[in-house]
Image (tube, rainbow, N blue to C red):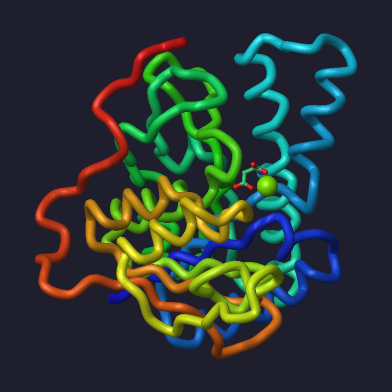
Amino acid sequence: METLVLKFGGAALRDLGQFQKVADIIALKKNSYDRLVVVVSAMGKMTDELLSLARQIMPDPPKREQDMLISVGERISMTLLAMVLFQRGYQAISLTGSQAGIITCGRHSDARVLDVKPRRILPHLDEGKIVIVAGFQGVSSDGEITTLGRGGSDTTAVALAIALKATRVEFYKDVKGIYSADPKKDHTAEYLPELTYIEALKITMKSERKILHPRAIELAIKNNIPLLVSSFEEEGSGSLIIQDGRDLFEKPIYEALECSVQ
Ligand code: ASP
Ligand code: MG
């Protein structure tokens, strides 16, 4: 049975109306995949707003408290999306990064994924439920809540896809896909329906607006997970990032074995 991981960013979840559009995409995918995992970011600019609240109290808040605060953004998205799906008659369950088994090092605000233990995800998938996971967050071996750095939900999605041996990850963004350059600044920019990981990495590294988190691409390269970058507004569009000629899933390789604590 094939597993698909979908990822929706802040723009796709900017208000409750958008949640309905996201639910439409999920419903469509549920027709072709029995096992669906949906990774969500915080709504719109919520992470910035939470950070600004903290900074009104002190310019450099303790990183542990900051992680506890900003990880809330993704929890709001996951629960609201679960409710929207329930309302439509789907069985869904939301899980925090920690509940989903995203194990990270203890480096607050810039943690790396060390392992994924999807013990609590699998039984729900077996029962046919749509599992919604809060992106951007994990738990350290001490049980502390960590975050992966800004834009980290993309990395959560790829890490889960590795652990669940998913067919691919589909990212729903406010762009049609990946262009050779920024189409807003360069009129010669070409839309790329298919590209390799290295091309995708080069493009995202040099563009100011990160279409995909480079760490997510690096993680996909190490594990040969196909990625589709698609628009939540334009059905059927998308850039597929793949690489031929490598064996799938010899053994999962995550971001790091440990990280230095700042
Ligand atoms: N909400 C977090 C951020 O804005 C994570 C993410 O969007 O991927 O950085
Ligand atoms: Mg965000």
